[in-house]
Amino acid sequence: MSFVLILAMLWLSLPWLLERLAHYQLAELGFTDIEVEVGELGLNTARVTRMQAANEEYRVELTGLQANYTLPELLDGDVDSIAATTVTIHSKAAADAATSLPDPVLLVSLLNTAWHRYTPARLLEIDSFSLIDSSGRESLRAAAAIQRQGENINGVINILESSKDSSTDSIK
Image (cartoon, rainbow, N blue to C red):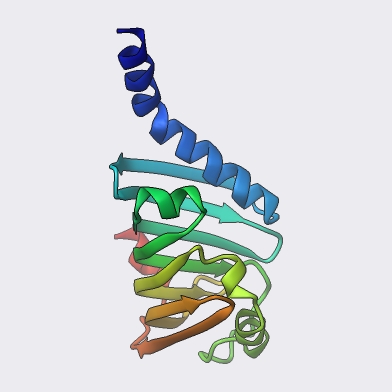
């Protein structure tokens, strides 16, 4: 009887444990202002309604995050797939207002990132990925499907039409 009670308490505390684990791992990567809202957890799926974190250069927001896994792989720190409805990266650095192109320094820093260290899933799908400059303008909108094989990352990124000013979109 007590074993069942302990198991039930552990199962009910899993969302809290996932939030703490995500907070800890993001803090280890240098992020602050971390918020994680876990939706539901199952034996093969976890859903995070919303997650945000910031560092000195960027504020990152994710919504509609879903991870699919098997229990043995999850215990090894691996996940089959992660899908996100939206990923938005807000640049804190001042941007040149005269251009609507993405900041080349930002793009180079994104390309030079060791993404395999940040991607525990073999497949990462993002429906809408946006880069927002410090003035609130969307400089890039894309969709992505990325596969990880060891330290190699392969994928397809489709550039989508950007809205002129994302700050007006967020007011609606």
